Length: 92
Length: 92
Image (cartoon, rainbow over all chains, first blue to last red; front, top):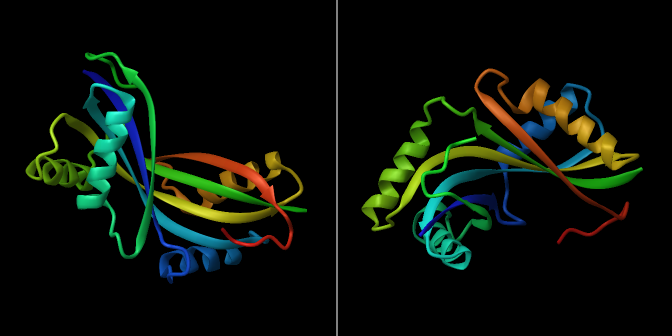
């Protein structure tokens, strides 16, 4: 069993309103940042997952998204797995 | 001027408490997901930025993080820029 570092990005589905994104866009505009458009805000969840292989780590993270992390009606998710850290690995 | 797609990931700084992460870790455990550890929750902000170059797009996003998006005391941020979309680009 290896430990994988998994990053899950959960974002509002395209086409759905994103009031937090709109608020940030207005705030950036007020601060003088021009040419910024289409701001969308989501969540990112980092976790360490123990799994026999990278594929299995991705499968588990997908199940976690389906069952808990993401709202299947309003959100899309993306998963990135990075190389396994050694079993007793230190944290960077 | 090209349009760049910028993804900003804002995460609680290592060592700081993350109650939302802890809550998710407990919930995953209750759902039967074993071997999950070190859950941390942050924000991801997607934006389209108009800039003359990729480097400039990253610089602007960094300024946005420093001035608005991230709390410099409690949060770290990472920025990813993907290829420019054409000026009148469609949304995927």
